[in-house]
Image (cartoon, rainbow, N blue to C red):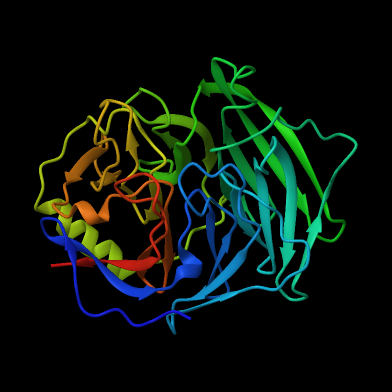
Length: 348
């Protein structure tokens, strides 16, 4: 049972993570956390650093009440380093990840109305990746995802990353991967943000951040206006982020060598937090807030450090709901202890 958290803030300059709930069920990292019908669905993950076997738990967190419960759905898959996306407002589709013995590219779906997990099947024309972990799945439309990231195991990884379009058919319980013609840098533990492109011909582009030694974001896809399923609107949070970046100094250079961080899109902003840096041998887990602002050309990065070492996180998730950004799970400073806290991004 989640418990109320006494007032307290893990603060940076002008911003803070404010604890709103705490429950041992939420203590995990490298899980997925997906908002569906006003609930956060946490699937799998690692319960402690160094664990080889991922959890098969599905936990549902109600942000309105601050309560978490374990879902007793049959067939919950053991997974970590996967990604998940809602489909048709009913299914939660878990894509790829580590099952304790191998990297997968399969799709397993939770029917939230029936409370049952289902293993969907690939169609005859399916061309799946070799195996996915620490990849990203970005929702393009109700039944279409863009999958990006490194394929295969340690000894079979390619020097580049492939882009796949994943089409889902809930009525038939099937999926189909189609490999796109473009490639990206080889990335793992990166994040993806679907952002509007400014100018006279507006559209959307999918940007990849981190997961390798590059600092610059990489374009992984373009879509014309009207082709994209628009993300939730968060006008108050967008206004607060605009006010925060107006107090900072923008730069064209972003974080270098960051992986296993979180990313959420809020209007024209990509909000990145935490992660593990590849640029240091010690003290590698971060608690910095980065905001990528696409309102300018070229876009600018804003960096807001945090003094509280207790907010260092990697393998965590952020989730947008009701005009607020939530931080859920992740390993802390020691890289082994999972946080049971839920926090929301607050502004001072």
